Length: 352
Image 1 (cartoon, helix red, strand yellow):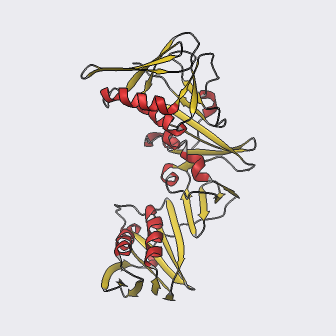
Image 2: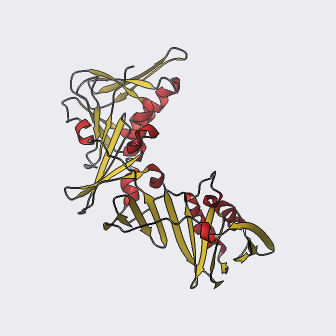
Image 3: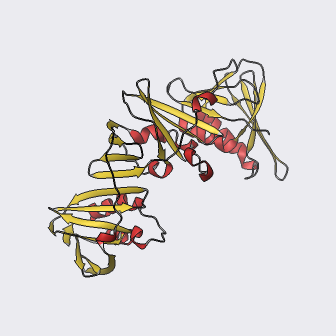
């Protein structure tokens, strides 16, 4: 194999593909990327056995062939190269030349590179998957004992594509209007941050997802599990409703939470007539209080929430005005936004 190609294009392609390559692995070839030159194109593939990313780019000249080489090392070289890059297989090595620089890297046989069996897919739809899951990703659980919550639940329902995530303490669900028909799936957390921006082609089967954007293809296993019936934990709107700025609340919680510690992140919310008082008490540090304006006309209510969870939730709403609906101090709060009618969030209360 021998190819000559543009340095910037090579660096960009490797930057994309090596996101699937684990930094540390007990299987040496999983630290490598597969380089395959064929018909004037160089295809680059990386995998961690659960997920595969591949992309292709044009070459200036080539001799067909395949080889595997350390992906992140090749990326570092490409980033620092000073001109066009030539890659040439030489026995058990890959020779890299650029400008006056020359590198000789160890390789492993291309035949040993794991083949990711894509299989067939049941349906293909086009939509902006990244922006859909972005607003719910903060609620994905990282508790591996509840593996079925380690991802975003994607479903087609009533003329919409719906994305939902929960860790048992908070929940976020959003939707876009689009006709689609597919069996509900759970997208793994590792995939979410790798999704290309913009409209992509999404193909689904019972155990895999394929996302295509330009010359880049991502194929991932799905989470094999049953997602809980999240609709039953979303409370109905209550008469106790507070309307406030998400940005202002996030900033106020951030200030008062300075007094908190890792073990005690509880913030007391005291709603009264058109006012919300936040209080954090820490027996080792002291306490903090802040009052902010809200629209609230119901009976006074005091309820506790995890400050970090509130911050994450309000960050997802950005600068929008939100409403918090709460039945009582022991019930979850439903957070919605008039400008985003398909977006619902739930946060569980805590003792403070």
